[in-house]
Image (cartoon, rainbow, N blue to C red; front, top):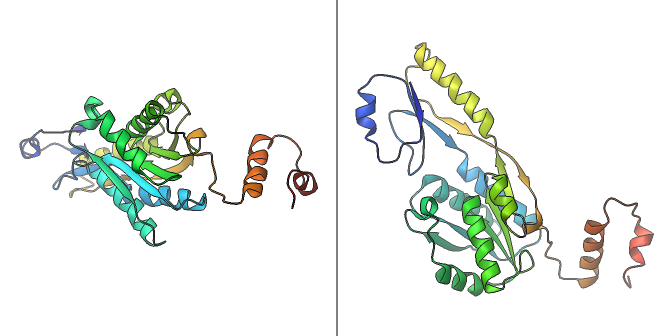
Amino acid sequence: AIIAQLGDVNIGLLKNLNIPIIVQNYRDRIPGVCNLTGDYLGTGRLAAEFFINKGYCHFAYYGISDTVWSRERGAGYEERLARQQYGVHRLLEPSGANEQWAYNLETLGAWLKSLPKPVALFACDDYFALHISETCKFFGLSVPDEIAILGVDNDELLCNISNPPLSSIVLDVENGGYAAAKVLHELIEKKITRPTNITVGVVQILSRQSTQKYVIRDKYIMQVVEYIESHYTQPLSVPALQTLVPL
């Protein structure tokens, strides 16, 4: 039996082996075999709702053009924002950008500088979110004041080597592993006779400093919100907050 992420392997040849196969999709979902896939559209919608609730009016998406998970995350993001009459500024890297860490710093920097500010930027995964973070630092763009960044996968190494640390969408990957093993067992036992997809869902958004800013136009309300975020471990009251502002 095989569980694998297969890139350019001829799936037809593997199917001729007549053994159970589960493929973690990458460029596309593969017909005729079980796919370990994800709720990519739902992930994009969740990112959009997260930023809408923070009050943003400008949105951007950064991803890769030739993978199903990047395409559908971007599509879900744009779909949810379109319901609020918002558009999305998009930049998609060509094939191979994710594996080789290859991206054009000047092109990415020029795109980021051209975006209306403040902007909520959703990256297709944490690698791409880190590209944005490093490029912002190189070109003197403030995160999150000018560009708020949200990634996917909650890769703690990537998220925490960024400065500031990256917010990320946490996926239910461990449960996905159990589900894949269960399907594989049922394939071996002949309880499943047709290909079935295993979908990894979303758990939550883990918020770090890269998105910890609300877009509030009233400077006094913003002052109160920032005070609450800095002092939430201390006793707070409305009268005490009122002393901060002339309201």
